[in-house]
Amino acid sequence: MPAMKDVSFDEAALWKRFKAGDKAAFTLIYREYTLSLFQYGFRFCVDREKLKDMVQDLFIEMWNSRETISEQVAIRFYLCRSLRYKLIRADCQCRAATDKQGKYLHDISRSEATVEERIIDSEINNSRSILLDNAIKKLSRRQQEIITLRFYMGFTNAQIAEMMHMKYQSVSNLLYSALGRIKETLETAPFARRLLETFFLFL
Image (cartoon, rainbow, N blue to C red; front, side):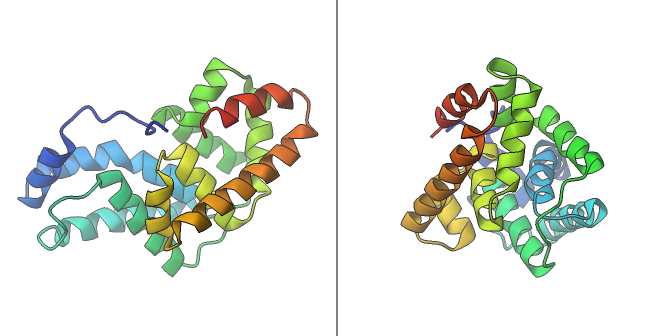
């Protein structure tokens, strides 16, 4: 599964510069990954401003503790895992999408050229996108998180297992059950067959 966005720089070199206190490197990391963090976090935090504060705090903490952070990390994975800890500590609830929140998430998705956007642009129209989003909202919190990490963020099952402190097989089972529920929901909707075919191409 391809990552949501191709990295156009040497990530290891960028991280090394950041670790050495290079503010330009830190700024580049912030610009490259902030929207990814919002896309991930917004599915689990109702309060937009609260999420914004958590993301800002995450980067501040990362800068202040840069000397003690591991020398080699996958930056996006590290940031998402760190934000997940913050979301858990803040006891954020799965967001109930309002029109305003839905538009905000859509704007983020447009900016980041997500997997869902590529599917929509190449295969389906906006109505099918709404069907898929509604199907995902019917999943449990953990199922939504796994779908988000796997298909929207591009993480592997092994990375998801590490991030969520689960066994690899448990992640695979939960992902399979989540996709089964999505399939059941979409099978009753108009135009669902083509949407299902497109979505399951990314397994």
